[in-house]
Amino acid sequence: MQMDKLNENQCAFFLTKKKRYCRFKSTANGKYCPEHAGILGVDQGRERVPCPLNPKHYCYKDSVEKHLKKCQKQQKEMPPYFSKGINMDRDGVETGPEVKTPLKEFSTPELQNLIEKVEKLYDEHVKAIDEEILHHHCLDEELGNESFGIPAIRHRKQQASLVGQIQKLGLLQEGFCFVELGAGKGNLSHWIQQALPDKSDLGFVLVDYGHVRYKADNRHKWPDTGPKFERLRIDIADLNLGIVESVSTCHRPVVAVGKHLCGGATDLALRCVTNTLKLRESEEHSQQPEQKKMRTEDNPSQRASLAGVTIALCCHHRCSWDTYIGKEFMEKCGLTQRDFALLCKLSGWTAATWTGWKTKEEMNREISGVSLGVSPNRDIDGVDPNRDISGVIPKCTDSKEDQGETSSTAKIITDKNRQTSQLDGKSTEDKEITGSNDLEEHQGQEQSFSRTDLHLSPTQREEIGRKCKRLIDYGRVLYLRNCGLQSQLKTYIEEKLTPENVVIVANIAS
Image (tube, rainbow, N blue to C red; front, side):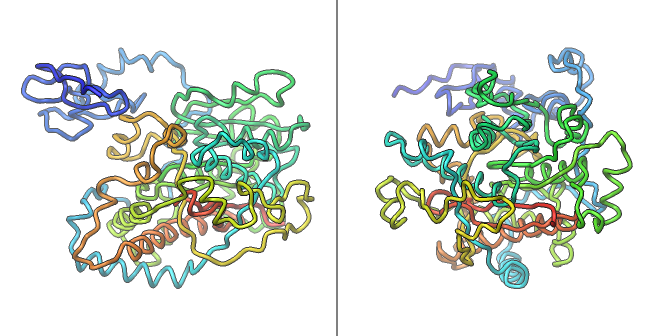
């Protein structure tokens, strides 16, 4: 294939997806246009910052006001549920400047010291999590499609297990409003609806900041296709979910779902549903911490209640201290903001050495007695949600993580994260289905830096990365428990299908 030719005075930034160079002019004394120079951190003498209205493009810091007058986003009136930064950090823990030190610049003693802490804290707090790979019959036909390869099967098996997790919590039934945060195409909501095809007393709200093509919403426009999907284009950081009209007026308890919420977007989502919704009435609600009650009950307009959470976790290396909801846990463990930044960097070691199934034949050989992952003793469809679902015998394991469908929802927290999301607009699901490698999606150059001075084998690095992920997730679990929810981590899919295979679930104590 012939490479695009770089012309004189043309920006030298190569757009991989479009297979050509940027067509804007480069600056007078540089090789990049102002937009890409700012994103790459090239000194231009004038600082460029994300547009306050739309962080997908940049403007000069000293002319923000001028830019806002002509920015097209200014023409749109903000909806009532927009509340700038409502779901950002409010936990009172001091937050310093972002730690941008590359992994290779951390000293060997500092790395060794943190790894020792990780090993100790993991054994003390996390130890092992349950493996519970579930299934739902609504995806039987999809999983039986012989034309699908591993990328397509990967997502459908994950969706089947997530629907199963929702049902096991007793939440897959009429009378709930399902809010998919970081929805992307909205496929998870689609399959939840397909699991309840004859039910009409349901609500579906899909939240995503970015524009997505081929949305599942389009399959639910007609009277005979179930409840209509409502889509909110808003950053989760600014979403007051409790006063979204369709949520607050329907009086249906909210079930928050997601697959996969990338990095800090998970923290924003969990803070969103606990900040702006009250807990569904139960005995546990009466024991809810006083400070959490005040956030929801002092505003009579916030009538919506939270019933449960099922969110597949993803991309821990893109978490940030200012959005992280488990800072209290980290501080109790003696970990600082700098330690947390290093923890996130080390978490990338898990995906750096991951290898998964390449063919369906290989997958079927290793999953003995299972055709495309549909196992009778794991299918929980038709089980009374109020009865104990013991068809799955959980085995204790520390799973390897889930790789997956990255949403553009959070305006991605840090400048580095913004670069990744804005220069490459496809969701991870899009890329996987078109054949991209899982490994490429969940590691950056920094995450794959092996640090030979530590004398660690690939297996040891992978294990350390996994433990870092679980410590980050455990802080999230404790946050939800402190909000009055029952919460835990589960392995919901085989790690050979994705290294990001852990889900955080929560519901109200009965």
